[in-house]
Picture 1 (cartoon, one colour):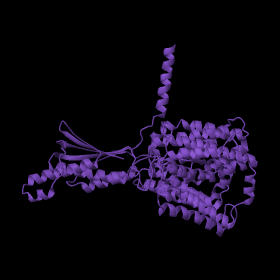
Picture 2: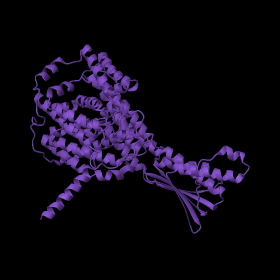
Picture 3: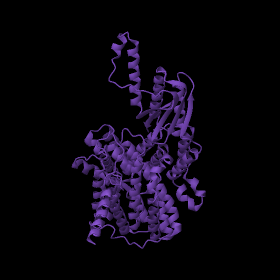
Picture 4: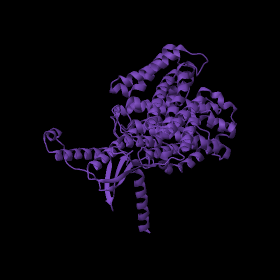
Length: 601
């Protein structure tokens, strides 16, 4: 019996060890504008400053939790308890995001109450009660967890141009919230010049610090912008004295989650179905946020790290289950906090730990949380305008990271037009059936669905293998046109296609110079989102790549021995091929020879 117990302990130990072991990710090279990468740990003072800025930004955006609480009929005390409980659970989510294990991503993604799911939460509580909303959030995210293992296999259905559309639409959707707050239309019907001045001051502070500031100023860019904005708000009379008085009447210390009057979760099918669809759109938004932070943190980014995306999605689903159990609205990764990480140049995952701990501690101090929630609207607007600009550019970079043919151009263009039309003309959704309005009222959701749907549609009939017979004696242009044509159809990276064209051309030149080819040469190209593989097959002798050191061309040109010059030029071509291609293999079987060149994509 004792032996069995030890065996069980060993199994449990091995399982826990496997869970906490850091998985091997894609190799990364830190971009020049970043100060600290994912795995680098900044000094404690920098961690505290950056963590505080992330926390401050989250508390500014707690307004979504306040809106959810007020819209469901909570009084002032209930609203404050809802907001501080949300902040506490968001702190747990931040810590989970910062952990790098086989189940969590280890990235500085910070969560906020999701504006996408906000309307669905309010409608579900109003129609079916809080218990039904809790059950809908729990069940829909449990179902989505089962999709996580399949995300790496769906790379072809979420190529960079589709994710780029989602990221770009995230930025476009922030324009309305940012600009309306910046010009005073969020709380009134007339444009306020004072609000514009506050927003411009906030935006100018962020831009000056992040573009022209020293390392220390870059780290404090958003904090500096917020301080300038709040200072201008005080001068121009944007601080609400009545709200400040109500906040001061709150108790200084309170335990989060305890003040919530929660029913048991109820499982209502008519509440779960729409929530499942909205949470699926939230998962796509999470994928977009993950890929954005993946790309901007890697100078040599080539393709999406779908295993990082999977762990990020799993973490957001688990976080949302915690929100559902606590009766809170769903969360999502904050685009504004990604913008803060980019502006400061600090991408360290350790920031997520510090920010998470700060959020959890401040959740015990409702007065402080309430003060930050009352941040003047134009200050929040200026920060959101900066974030919108950053996300739009990040989306464009993702879209243009691949070659675009007509089908992909239509996928990108039509998705952006259709999604933006609902933002420009929101009344288009008024005539839609009631069940579909939650989807149609969001340009982000509609644009994302269009991008995914059109990508699937246009993939019909596309073969990822192409073959041609080289007919001319000098087929360099023929090879280039062939590869570029199919590279656009497949959405391959232009730099990889160019390298492939040069390498294949050099192989043909070597074979012809060595008179190793008898008859036509067939070029077969295969693409699988991970590699571009070019195979040359022909009747003749196998390719022999010369090995050797550097070639002294000046000495060879002075030498009258032509054979030495030809051998040296052969060596130069061989060196070019091995450097252009990631792997080269030559073979010969029964008179048929071939060369296979692999290019990592």
